[in-house]
Every structure is written in structure tokens, then in C-alpha cells.
Length: 528
Image (tube, rainbow, N blue to C red; front, side, top):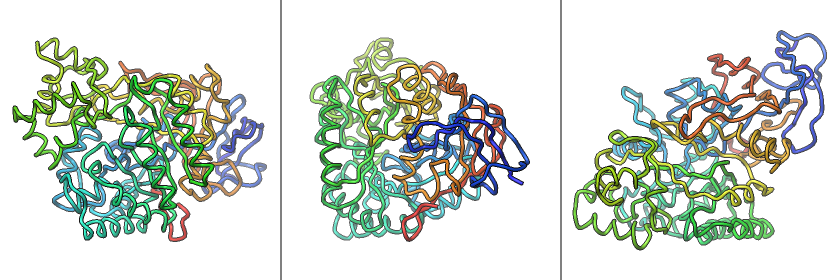
């Protein structure tokens, strides 16, 4: 007796191979070799596509999986696994001193929920907390480099000492032993942006020794984008660690039409034997905190030091020069155009306005409105940056190393819709409507390919013996409905989502089930 039988679906198995029509049976959370016989439940799937569950290679759900356990932002899209700990900043490993400062720094990304239990300190304890709470979808974790640096060095703008670097390497190795799949770096965010080449090299050697991967937010996606990509590719070449270029983009006016140059770097590295993959989201605007646009020197010392400089007239003038005249490194070396910076979350200002519009209403210059708002919101303001290029987005998604990552911030009044729409947008807009990728190619980028990067054991494909993380979708109807004006709208055309054979979306409705769990690296490298 099978637990589940999906009858008559078109199977897209996650390899990129052509679809085929078949019945698929599940027993004990696993796809079975034979689909004949009786089943406790039968789903008639004529006209639907059965795919492996989708894997979000770049998620900012580090707290949302605990505070919103149905996690409809992702499960409604068909996501059955996501990778947390991104951009070098998250909440483990920490100590009693570092955690409150990180909570303050990351409030714009993840909120800072009242009455929340912050009792973990290590990577292993954080993963245990997720499992104890119960997850709708599975989760992997990257050790965040900025968090390591905050714990060992603090928020100071200086090289790590030999002893500090050794300690960071020890903590990274500990996090990998406790189940993390790799290391993320956030090289335009404090304090990770203060790391020099020697520091990154030492950490990447630890990754190579453990068979884990480096996931960098590079030093620039603007004026210095190609040099920033070259830096992390060189690190991979020299240390032998695998490299995953997350939210791979070429943004701002200086990079219009230049994706081909970026992809030439990728192709040359892969030809040299570098184990390199990448992900991207299918939208033009980016999303981050407003404070990220500050020059790096202005954020030294952490949130308290930053706020002190925002109150100092001399420091404010130096910041103005950086953002208006020379190009802040926090804004990727590009002079900031305030008409492209739109508020998506603020405690004190109207969301939806650009900083230029806010400044006009207040009768001040754009940089003054920027600095005053950071003070009023205590650095927690979030923004959209309208700096992308459609030709670049399409060129990157066509690359054979490509996978999918939403990079979706889920807090704020009007967050980026990519947190709710990335996967159906690829399937509906870019595959069905525009034909940029076939359905089979699109699904491979969401399933089998990211599963290989993560080293997931028997996940990511529809094969006997593989975990029954599955999505049933209507290929003619699947689409995103989340918009910049209404970003939390659920997609259409994804009626069933199963995690380990248990429905989390059933007939288009959430079930409240929590069959997910953390997937952790094992001593021999497989992630189970």
C-alpha cells in the first residue's frame, strides 16, 4: 500500500531531459520503484507537470521559518528547500555580546521580533532550534563570514590578527562539522567588507578541506563588478574551494549590456577546472537596506558608531561627497541616483517613495533625506534599487551554470516581490511567455542542478529512492502575481507541494504540516 500515488502527470525529472507521462508512487516519504498497486491517497494529475521540489539557493528566511512556520512565501511557490545564512550575515555562531548588535544590524532584513527566544549560540544549536520548532520546508545553512568576524574581531575596519584569523577558521570548521554546507561572505556589508585577501584565502582553504563551497556577495555589482568577480574566482582557483556566485548580476548604467564579459570570466574559470555555479533572480530591481549605501568607513564600529557619524556634521559632509560625487563603495562605486532608490520598509517615512521624492517633499537635498531617514529609522530602512538591465538578466539565466535564488527579504511594508514570486515568474514569464528557457531547462535550474551544488543526498530529482519533495504545477497557468505594489500575493498554477511525501500545499491551500527539517553536511560530505 503506497502512501501517495500521483496518476497521469507529465514528469519533468530535474535533469533537463524531455518530459514523459507516468504515474509516481510514494511510500515512507520516498519515491518508490513501482507505481502499481493501491494507495492511501491518489491525486489525479492529468495535464499537470510533476517536478522535484524547488530549491531556493539564496533565502533570507533565517527568522521567518520560526516566526511564520507555514512559510507560505516559499511553499506556495513550490520551494521545498532553501539555503539560509546568506550575504555573510546571520545569527549563528554568536555570543551574548555579538547577538544584540547583529539583531540591530539585521532588523531591516529580518525584523527583530519581540518576545523571541534567542537561546542558541552555535550553528548546531540554531539548526536544532529549527528542527525543534518544525519546518514546512527543508533548510540548509551557510556559516556567515561577517558574523564570524563580528564575533572574533568586532566591527573594526582593520585586518584580523593571526590569532583572530585562526579563531575564525576554527569557528568555520566547527560550523561545517555541525552541518553547515559552506561559507557566505558579504563584501559590501560591515563587518565582512573589512576582510583582506589573506583572510578570505585562509577561510576558503578550510572550505576546500571540508568539500564545502564559498557563496560570496562580492565587493561590487556596479563600477567594480568585473574586478569583484575576478577576486572571488581567483580565490577559488588558488584554494581549490567550490564557488557559487549568488545573485549574479551586472547592475547600474556602467554595466548595461556587459553580462557577456562577466560570463566570459565564468567560462574561463570553468574551463580551468574551477567548480563554479551561480544563481540569479528574475527581476530588474535589487533590494537591500538603505544603510548599505553608506561608505565602509562610515559603518566601522557597528550600529552605534554608524549612528554617531550620522549625527556629526563633518562626517555627514564626507558621506555626502562619497555618495554624490565620488561613488560610495557601499553603493558599488557608483554615484547614487536617488530617483532609483525606493523605500520598501520604514518606521517613519512613506513607503513607495523614492529618496528623491522624499527629499523634494521635505525641501532638502537627496543625501540629507537619506541621512536623516537612517537616523530616524535607526538604520532599519529597506529599499528597492532600480538598477538592473533586462538583457543582462536574460543572458545570465541562460548560462549552463545557472540556478535560481530569490534573495527575497520578507519584512517591511512593501518588500521586493521576488520573495513571493521568483519561481513562478521563471516558469510563467521567462519560460512559457518569453521562451528564454524550456520548461525542462527551467526546472533543472530549480532542482537537480542546485541539489548537486549543495551535495544533497537523494534529493532534487524524480527517481526511485529519492526523497518525495515534489511539486505539481499547471504548465499553462503557473505565474507570479506578486507586484511591487502588492508584493505578498501568492502565485497561481501550483496546486500541490509535497515535502517528504506530506502535502504542505494541498489543492492550493496550506495544510499546516511541518514535514521539513534541516539538511546537514555529514563527515564524508553528503548533505542529509
